[in-house]
Amino acid sequence: MDKKLMSSLIENTLNIPISSIEDMRRTPGGMTNDSYFVTVNGEKYVVRIAGKGTDELIDRQSEMNNLIYGTEIGINPELIYFDIESGLKITRKLESSKALTPELAREGQIMQKIINLFQRLHYSKKPMTNRFDLFGLMGHYENLVQEVQPFMMEKIAHMKEHILALKKVYETMEVIEVPCHIDTVPANILVDKKDQLYLIDWEYSGMFDPM
Image (cartoon, rainbow, N blue to C red; front, side, top):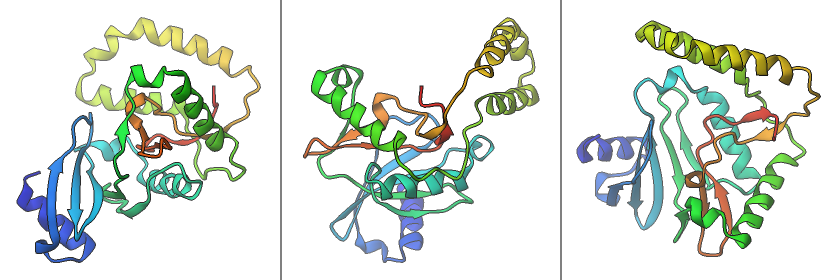
């Protein structure tokens, strides 16, 4: 999205004059969405524009509910705005924060903080309102692929047999589902200037097996 369209979007969403927008730059990374750092009247925000076709992959209502959930228990940056229809999300930018790298995540002190972060989520007494249905979601993704590139499914047919075998084993286990983030790669964990950790990108979150 070019800067003119982006400025107009922010103007209409936050109900501010364009002249209030002091800075705007695209953030690095992001496989399915575009994100921007935006400064408005001295306040810093992160604006996410949902990628094309992501509405087929993501339950935006559940994402919004769980963003609020994460904010309430203090492990998600403050949510400013969320639009279920478009997937537009605005959060407050954490001052002097950075995303973890695989190397940084392996450091002993940081690893302990990561453990504490997930304990706060997994042991939260309030359940999330949705459940992450792993095998149901896999079936949904398979149907989407079948519609556009059916030959791809032939290439992984042998893998599906193994997955279904694992599914049968998994279903015999006694699993206690708890609030889970699901997409916990290092880049989705931010550390601020006080060395406090936060989780971002709650698109796949829900009640699930914490293991």
